[in-house]
Amino acid sequence: MSNHPESIVSFDDIYLFVLIVRHKGISSAAQFSGLQRSKVSRRLQELEKALGHQLLIRTTRAIELTQQGKWLYEQTSNPVNTLVDASRLMREHHLTPRGRLKVAIPPALGMTEIFSQLIEQYMKEYAEVKLEIEHHVQSLDLRRENVDLQILPSYIEPLHDDYIQQRLIQIPYSMVASSKYLALNGCPDNVAQLNNFHLLASRYNKSLLPQGLDYQLFSDDLNLLQRLALSGKGIALLPSILIEDKIKNGQLIEVLPRTSFTDLTITLVYPTPSYLPEKTRAMVTLFRETFSK
Image (cartoon, rainbow, N blue to C red; front, side, top):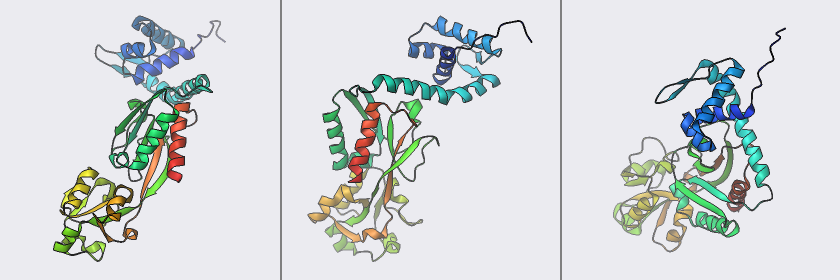
């Protein structure tokens, strides 16, 4: 047995090591943690000494993980996230939700009355939370982008398997056109006949239609699709909740039954498995309550 005392590994130093890797440099990690760069560098050296392995190869422009450093980061990154989130939750427990909450949503959802009302209600109940709403059609790296919640259509997979996924709602779609367009071009009897018409569709509903259809216009701008349908430029497949009023007042006419298309499933995605800040938990609850109605 060795007579030399074993070096003690500090959890704080492991946390700083995770920050260095995550922020891609000692200077960035120092800025994030509010410490001097020299102190972060010294504590990294102390960690390497305690472990008996070099963890990082330092260059003037970047850092590179050694094999041992890569292994340590893989083992400690998620536990560090959990511990930090747990301590943050304890500090925030029973406190009024506050801070910044960043939510990423598909543009299609942002155009709906139901989402506007949800945000209005959240702002009324949690006035000390600063909201950032971003429109994205692709899955985001939520931890790296500092996004608290993302709403995704079911055909887009989250970037990481450990993200929590909760199904919110299934959105029905309507195939619609103006009376002017139908008077000039007739009306399809089934989905297979759509190739004989000017079809207006988006990425959100392409998965709901048969493969091989020819599109007159393909765009993720649902307002554009709706405007073109209203002006008689073609037949558009749009979320029913977006155009319900236009159907009721006769501006748009449904040309095929809604049962002709699969509903689009919308999923709520967030990265933290257990320890949600109160501001995030409140938004998750509001989403679930709103869409369950």
